[in-house]
Length: 384
Image (tube, rainbow, N blue to C red; front, top):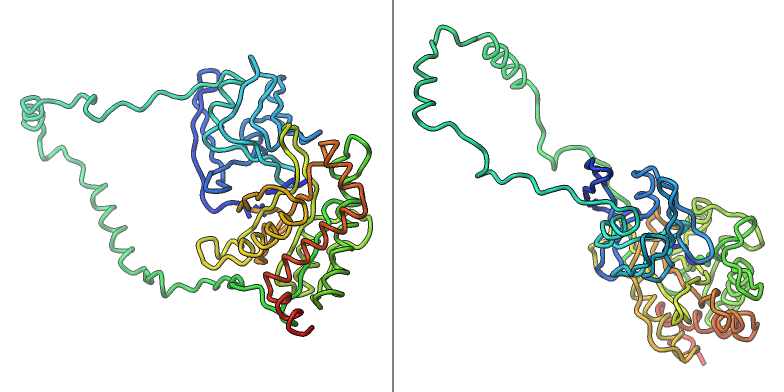
């Protein structure tokens, strides 16, 4: 299961939202994630600030608060368990053991699920009562200058004189460590190394399809096919963040990719959505924290090449590539792509993904996309 957060980094900005809970104003400060221009919030962050719990299970997010549980479909807009079922405006996104809910849907979700309200707007400035000129004049006349305390003023003057001795350096002169620049290209030939990250593994099995296909097994099988095809057909080097059925944390995956001096990480997963129309692959691109506003975006550009190759291999209608932070590279500076090979919760997709032939076709398409993104495909043709 993708279980994303597309590395989504923790987002750079935060949004403050105030809700009324049992008549008391409760402030929420939620880091902002972005997918296709839509700001999202982590449901784990939301649960933690409300004293709720979140469980990701069976392609759904189960949100429990004050003894009441509601469920939200991953990659879906439906919510069950409130006063009555309702729809959000935006789909809830899976994200590395978490779920992302659109910022605009947070208040409607809490209102329809748990009867939260929103605090009244603060009073307008014009509503404040100010004394009229006559009353102010009377008050001033009744105040003797001899009664004004001067000690606080003298203390303030002393504090100001002390501040004058403090050296305030301009921002540009302050010593701050320069961030490691994010790569602006993937490189080619011997300068390119792909880190292939088979999702889940060991105790973390990922999604289990209705007919028994385990996500962790699918991911490793396709990763092995991809590594072999890249080397044999394009001369492209690759490393795997796990080569067997072992439990590997996101930090260890990142360390293995960085230790190998990879220039791109491709994380392989299976999707899990209860939406009836959810079929086929999905692609997500992660832009490193230090280059969120920079162009070019190597991960996004490469992901578009993968999408084009997968369209041809699967005869699937073109899918947009979503930009989103991926947990596997949250604290790193490596461009990252996450691919969901298909929807394991759908019996037809699971049947296809169970086929070794289909797995190899997907791996070949991914290899073709990587080759195109790095120029290796053109080089192979010229050599032949």
